[in-house]
Image (cartoon, rainbow, N blue to C red):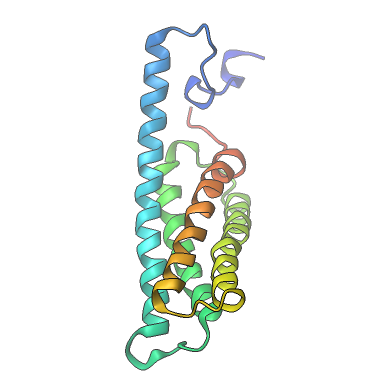
Length: 165
């Protein structure tokens, strides 16, 4: 393997014997990446929760009696926002030239992780019979939190795997 075949140092965790300066740079880079990821996630969260509440409890109560349908619509919109933010800002340095594959894997991870807040909402709403707006929102937030951790791991491991030369 020659030097051009190796991934840049920022894609690998430093070993226990790496210089302290390198460890600080990599830690700072990871902290910036996580901050960007959480910022994009925060915007997607506002889209998700805002649209969910608008559909369920907003003018006209469009999907008042259909919390899961409202959740699926809001998750789809939030996923589009997350894709754009993560592709062009958070993981821009690791975007791959295979956009189709990247988008497909991103969508698969998001569908799987979207099932988490849908599942927590369904459990809360239908199993526990907690049907208030507050209960629906708490169940959604818990599911989104779990899904956020799993998304970050999935994006790093399977979606944004390239690097710029």
